[in-house]
Length: 444
Image 1 (cartoon, rainbow, N blue to C red):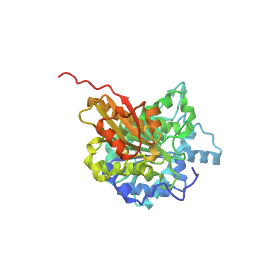
Image 2: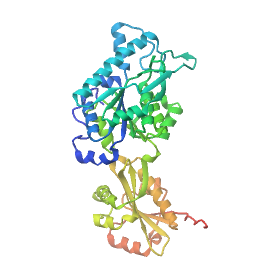
Image 3: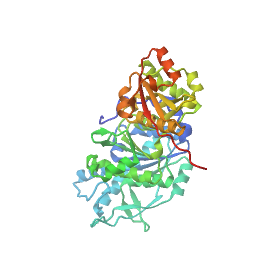
Image 4: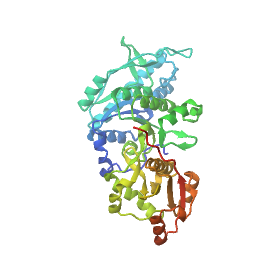
């Protein structure tokens, strides 16, 4: 990942076909976007402002929350000033708060000017009230605060007027005294209060790295465990508050939280409008689903299976064939995009069902999607009273045998119609099967 704006983004933001399909999905939704102070200073920030203008043009409501840690550090170094904490995580003494006031004014003004240049209306608001953090683990946090109350009605009224609320990490308490808060949990609290669809952290990091690997899609429960079992030390320290903010937001009903590199050209639009994305998306349990296919899925199934046909792993099926047999298919869906499929074929007069056309988009291969599709197929077949699940394959024997627990079969395991078909198609497929426990009907 480079340290400045890249020459080229992974997705072309101008690809309207890719973006416009999401417009009905996100229209009038609220996105809370948290900007690290370093991102506001980065040369790519004007491009981020342009991306924000695109979101507003698509009727997506945006709330901006900004940090000031980087700016405070620069000011402290220039003035050789002693500070107690740069990021609002530790104690804040009076001198540090004075520095924070100046840094906040500089950042807010810079964002204000950039949004004005892009024709985006904005307003700095005191819609969030703070209270003192108090004493934490024996340490007096002094002038460090935490969110006490959010005036959602005020924020929503600004959004209804097509105004972007701009929230600083300096908040006032009931008496009007200023307290320093960390912008990451602040953004999470605002996202929950507004019922936001997305919480986005724009950072100088590519996202979360777990055990040396970049996490693209991370379930909420998995992140909870990472933060709880001691592995949190393996996360970049500056991302811990964002990871905790993501957990807090999702527990509060926000469906998605994204952590991505704001230094990359088009990163924000790529993360939102591309099904693979760029950074780390933390998602609630409803993010992934396997469901029966619908007529509208026929084109996606056809496109997904084309690569398998090209590799001779699958038998070619026309669009017309898929549409005619759509009730036999089921799909694996991620964030409203079909990324895998499979088909169950019944043989009348038998208790045998065959699973076929199992294929997953290349990016998601090796991520357990295929196994989940096969397991779903087995459960669905058992519900029909089947006691045997067949799989005939030319290239994925290891997958069905080692991963899905299928046993070697012979032609004797095949229904008569399938046996005749195997002899005439010349594919010489290997035969595997798995015993099923038919689901018993409950007495009425």
